[in-house]
Image (tube, rainbow, N blue to C red; front, side):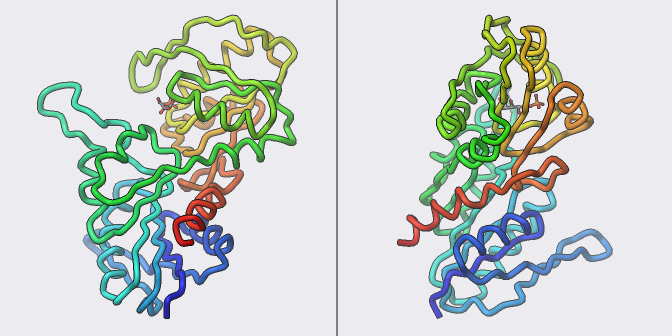
Length: 289
Ligand code: R5P
């Protein structure tokens, strides 16, 4: 039968459920387990023959990458119509070039392998959009910032702020959804956990501000931006991101200064407050029409 089937890997079950609901399609959850030596076992408990398969699996943490490769192999055991791979969070997208001789270009290494056996690739708020040009198959980035903007709406932010210039388009999209203004800060990273930001006179006194970013990892970026806003008299500061990595004490660090911290379901995390799947549903509708 040519039906659309969402096949969800173990890293993206919530996302897969929401995707299948939004598409009104069948859902097959991958049976994934580990052998005593830690190697991965994968089985798809469904017949996918003749179907258009939408496989969903985030590439974080590392073991999910192996599970994904095995799942593509398992999907291809069936005589399917087409395989669309949705990677809600593209791990390893933060190194798209070589800084020192001898380094791996991790984003390129991932793209080379992710496209094997796949017809079309979709991801959400990839850290660097030009990585998509490394694929030899059609590859698209879909933003979840409209969903984030709609989620933040009841909190009535007066301003959406990007913590650096790289996130300015995300802030613009969220602000557009909210019907409010947007701005950005200038960030310089000192090391893995610490950043500095150029002071900027933001006129945020007595305003509610939402800081949005693609990723919150150690929380250093958002915490530094929030400190600047607090010192300039902002009333409430909200932090929202697509990908809630929250490395080390990242979530507590952001919570200690922000009124609310929100992330989507592209990665399993304890600040998950909304789903990014509706953005992919819309993209798939146009992809499949
Ligand atoms: C960097 O350019 C990204 O957009 C994020 O701002 C960054 O990954 C956040 O990392 P952290 O939370 O560790 O500051």
